[in-house]
Image (tube, rainbow over all chains, first blue to last red; front, top):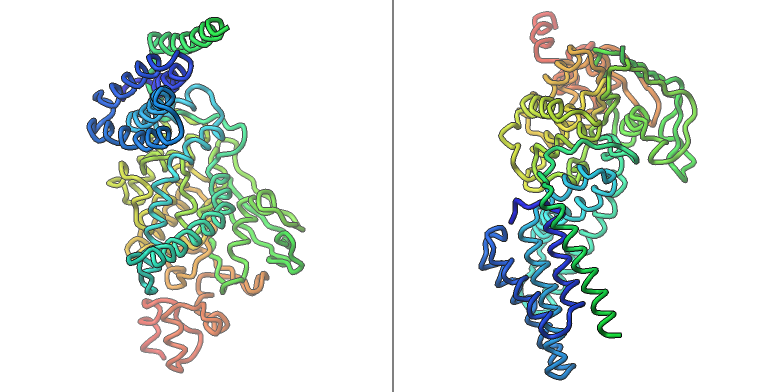
Length: 225
Length: 266
């Protein structure tokens, strides 16, 4: 599954929730939820069981809230749709390497600036995590303990969040200079370093999914009318 | 041939009345290494931003005077700057060190083969080929600084601008970098470097420019870092400072080798 073109993975992860919300409840939602959970168990979403478990654990609280707010029929209808969304997203995160997505975007002729927005968002997590670790270390050296009661933990959180956000804002200017000097300027035609292989079959598959979603919508609107 | 000329340049940052640079003139030619020294706030970083065509074009502000950069048409790398903080220079678009170094060359639109050749060479020159598959966010400051320098070197710049490039490096890393700077100059690149590593300047620089409060206070041969005025400003080399503090006569030796030579005749 990981070998599929990133756009194909995106198309699958987008089509399942779209169909879940378009097809009649509860069977449409049930079918898409089963498919989404089946995807989390495919070899691409490695390690399989933790991905399946993450999807299950993330979807569970929604069911509780829905049950508190709605009757059983509505809970099942909406719950299956939300579960499809959650499971599809968790599977996508496990199966899609951000670097491959960026390469695919560049190879498809997207502007380097647009691809940068995607990649920078995806790669911000490890960078922010590394910086947060440095800030926590620095605050510990100055006697702040992240352990203890709620008040103590909140104090520690503030001591982490404030420097993290302020330093991120501060570095925006310097990052702009660094990107400029490294050639990321508007209109640049970037060379894709390792464009993921695509095939006619996958392209047909993607268009097929778009067509199925559009047909389901048309059928649903007509059927409802 | 590559040549950078600053002719009576005065520069103001946005919303400031006092200029950060005042009436600065300098010239950096191909194959030449020019070191900028100065205390904090002297204007060395600002001068590099002006030389890199980032000030005022990107950061704003006002410039008087003339900045002229000429490079042969085949020099696609142009003039590139390495900033002092490695963490703010990470592209955010690469998930391995190899891709990070390739970020700049890819933006130049080179072929993949050409990019691979330049990236592998830059990684080898900085001694970080073993880090190629690591994630940039997981590197130490010194490793990341070397990655950033490799990223600029891989773009094959005609003029390399370095702002405190050894700030994050250990002594061995700094020595490798200064040797590399000399090697680049031998290969025809011009190098303008702001550094507080005065001890290394006689080893790698052809000329030294001392900035004070945005003005050129003095310029000359590398022996300038053993000058009485620079030593008084705490910008001299350790050897010159020691000689001076010992009350020995000027001119002071800049390096250990100078000191050994002069010792019998003191």
